[in-house]
Length: 403
Image 1: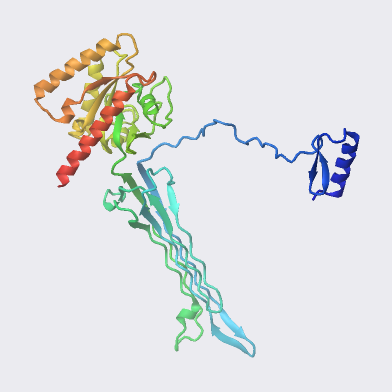
Image 2: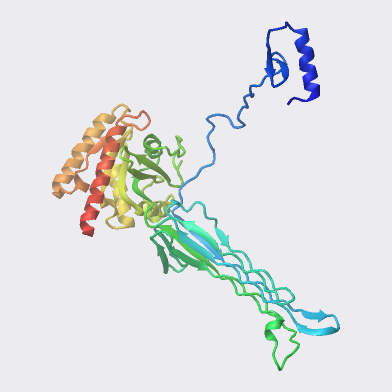
């Protein structure tokens, strides 16, 4: 029911209006629609429509983490005093144990970007009087992706979390200290000592993923790798006209009608001498090592696209012999540029000569050379079809090898 003051205002306004018009019943009350409305007002959203989150969530596949277990609680030094019994004896409780830092494999995690450089567990509570022990701290469980490899600082392999719910205790918590009641004995009826809680284990560990993505986009800076990833997936890596725009890998998922998803990684650009760590080359090549298949992205706007391909293969083989021979696709980007079509035909002819000289009929050597424009979406469908063909063939070969 409406309050008395609101009803009075509504009835006054109704009397001044034309009788029989804009008047309706609300329970036992008469309400004028000119003065009061029962329709809820529309609330504008606080956040504007279509505004993107500006924070960049780049992919992390290698991380150095300092882990530290929780400190144990200190033991209590206390003597009980009761009525008519002033010296009732020691009653100090023990401290609680510190928590462990535990890495647990989870299929819900795909990257290590949620980890910080230092992960710590909680400390145990200190002991209390009246023989009350401190509470043990909860263990710190940290989810990591499947296939996470954990290594010590000297490179020793400590664990490989390949299955869901597998865990590894990275840092153990310290034991709680004993209170003075623990030291009570026939020889010592009034122990005046108590232990401090032990410090938790602290060490540096290296976490890395065995497989970052199914396919990696490899090319020189400004070859159009980030633009291509934007064209085939919902990933939004930064795109600019200057080199080294991408400093961290980005992952995009290519989806198909049969609900199959293929992870494609945008690898930062390589330069000649990358295997000697020029232009952060070692860290970039480490990302490529964790891709099962390779996609060479060649810039057709330069004079010698074949020379760019040779440099890329040379750098990969110098970093790890045979890395450039993984299943691969060859993409000629920026086909919309003047003169790019002729360079693409020349590139196809040179690749055919190389294949005929090597005499290999494997899928790795017979993959077609594709021309596309990631910016104008030219040839994207053909590229996605060939990507799926390479994916199905690779999985079929692995299945036969396992049998």
